Length: 109
Image 1 (cartoon, rainbow, N blue to C red):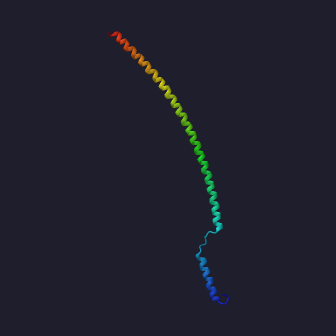
Image 2: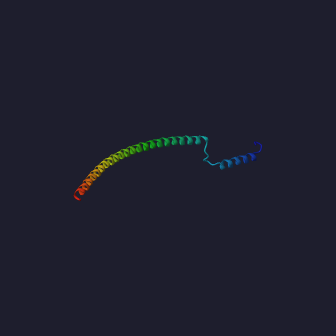
Image 3: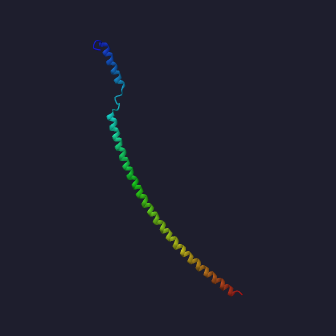
């Protein structure tokens, strides 16, 4: 192209037009690698945070389950006491009823 300066200018202008078509914000491999590493770091941090949160929820649930078990045992004990009391009352009433029936039979000929 040294001989033909017109061709050299045309070629230079063509290269300039091509360069202007390429966006200025085209990511390079270095930019992509940097972004990739940043995202990987962020993902690992999120995983660590999520694992910590899951462990906290598990601990809370375990504590609540234990509280519920204690409450259930207390209710069972109360039911057992109530059952025993009810049996005593019913037994006493049956004996009293039998006594009333025997007394009525003796009084009424």
